[in-house]
Image 1 (cartoon, rainbow, N blue to C red):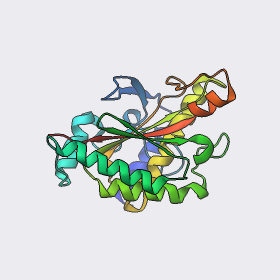
Image 2 (tube, rainbow, N blue to C red):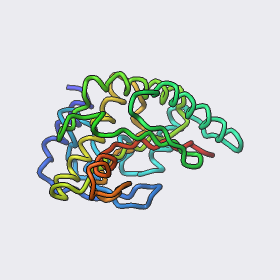
Image 3 (cartoon, helix red, strand yellow):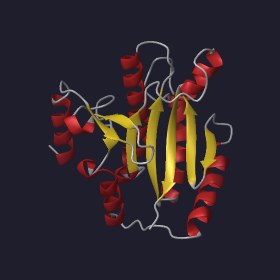
Image 4 (spheres, one colour):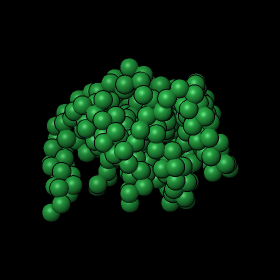
Length: 224
């Protein structure tokens, strides 16, 4: 049995433990971190929530892993140009896909509506959306000097705990696809579910709830 398979078996065996929390290094928001207690998020072989590698070291562990993988940091004016080119490539490859590409300073946010990415009340990526994620993976690999946060969100319909778990599973499903078959380096990725805590629209209307059901991929430049 491989070391990776053994680790997954240990995680699955620990699924009865209570989840703990970690802090998103950029927002400062507490998010559930199932990695610390060995709880496996998602389906068989799914990505655990939190940092996919160097979990105990947090954000510094992620940076150390990337340096160890030969990925250098960006400096000065190179940051803006690097992210400009990456944003332009995402806009070209994702046109008409339903994925929104937004810029927030030096960061890029990809917003994937759940109605496009998943079937109703499901966390498996729809097969028709897989080519879109493949395009995302190709662009991510073309620009390795960014970290990747994958965060699931839900609307306020239903129980809080259920929405939290669904947002986690959906974020994990996206991470699983990006990492699978060697697509994206796991050391770049942080996975979290925010449940219904971060709405971007009113939950009082169907249109608002549809906007709140989403998975976001936040790309941040690795800076020296």
